[in-house]
Image (tube, rainbow, N blue to C red; front, side):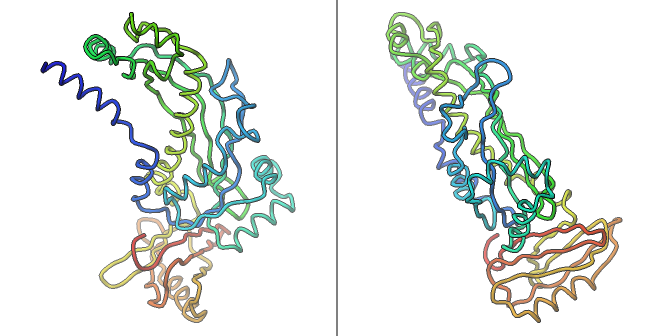
Length: 351
């Protein structure tokens, strides 16, 4: 009876161990936002597998998108990734923007799009580039087979234990683009990782009937059932990985290192301050905040530029933020060589 109780607990843990997408997003949403106002464009456009049958198929992806653009945006919003987020609502432009930015940045339409994004107060463009499809690889029976066997013998529910591992080789590519020329600042290549499936997720009715007389891990897989299970899990994991990677400390550091200047908002005992570090001197700065008097913004920028100091081989600037700044504010700085960096922060309350 003691063994039976332990196995029952193990079975319950198997059912409850996987958190829902909402639960996982809630945890990620509690992490600090990236201090950027971002315009999202592109899409998870389907690129067929180079070899073999892929995880997704073009016909099953509405509009050629293996993951809908709406679900990507919804996940970014619920994950509270950026200080401000908006969407490119031109479906045709979303489809062609990546190629235009990579091969024809001088196109008047592309330059007008980037200029409008700057004027609308965005710091960066988040470009969802494509979903490169790949086959599903079976890694065979995993180490849970003893639990599956014991549960099958004692409780008759071994079919619910995830005892076989698969992995999709599909990958989602996303990049940050700066809004001056559209060049890449940083990129992410997201993969779903291995997935453990129970017999109920990887076989058909015949397979379930066979599990009555043989252990579940001896029952073969149904390709269609495996594909459906892996597709669903792959979509969910790629979306969660997108939020997780964007909000990681590594991503924050990389953006600061790869932009023309690193801009930080610090809340110290003497009041909120803005700190800018750059490899070269700044040539200009602009503070943008709705409702802020222009003279106060100009005074802040003058004080910031006048504070230049050399520290560890880099230029450092800092100035106290005007107390009248409320809500979201954006700071843009330009360097002597023409580089531009921009960040958006929230004054007061949590970041």
